[in-house]
Amino acid sequence: MPELPEVEIVTRHLRTLLTNRTITKAQLLLPKLAAENSPRQFAAGLRNAKCETVARRGKHILMHFANAKTLVAHLRMTGRFLYLDAAAENPKHTHAQFWLDNDKKLIFVDPRQFGTMHLVATAEVFVTKALSKLAPEPFGEEFTPKYLHATLKRSRQPIKLTLLDQTKVLGLGNIYASEALHRAKIHPQMSPHKLSLPRTKILQQEIIAVLNEAIANNSTMNMNPEELDGSYAGGVYESMTMVYEREGLPCLTCQTAILRFTQSGRSTYYCPTCQKR
Ligand SMILES: [Zn+2]
Image 1 (cartoon, rainbow, N blue to C red):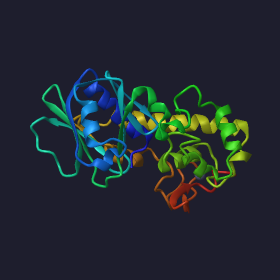
Image 2 (cartoon, rainbow, N blue to C red; image 1 turned 60 degrees about the vertical axis):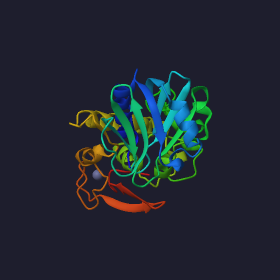
Image 3 (cartoon, rainbow, N blue to C red; image 1 turned 45 degrees about the horizontal axis):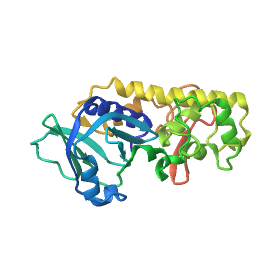
């Protein structure tokens, strides 16, 4: 499942491919992909729509059009965009297609069908249910140690689960939450309201660092720009993770075996020596 760094990379590629291009025609093939739009509305709203830019909010990809509409897309588990010749045959599980003014088409493929799209008035994007409750962007000015400290003070869940809550801290999925806690030397089961301001500051810095490193690693990968695939980052994690999926292996700092346990149905990895409550 793509996390924020992977979605950021997909967003950057879409921005390169789509900015100043016009969608001549769009077709929604799987109606539930855009449950809040009818297929007709979807096609009408995107017909001859010129893309002004492509942005990201959390793990949502925002394609802004000159007709004052925005297409909000979420890849979820297996959603991905492909950029093909207009005449190319669509692969299996193609659920939406967008013909462009350069004899190319962008298609959305999603075998598991958890991905979502929503065509909405640009002025209303940030008040939609999906986006209005999201925490500040990790790279934005609002995500300060003070913000994080105040947010953690109010949480009654273990810190790892708090970090996964996108209304509190944005951008960390299961992998990077484990990594950020390890780097900040914080035990994943710690009560977040007990974290001191100096330790919170370290955590805030490590969250930003781990996300930045993941983006940098992905950006340098040799990837085919014609396959805007949220999964192409798959090989990156192993090269940069210090605890994730390293159960039983020695901690890279102290050699203690990395432990794994389950929190809310998801695996958490940590070093029992380095990470303190
Ligand atoms: Zn250790």
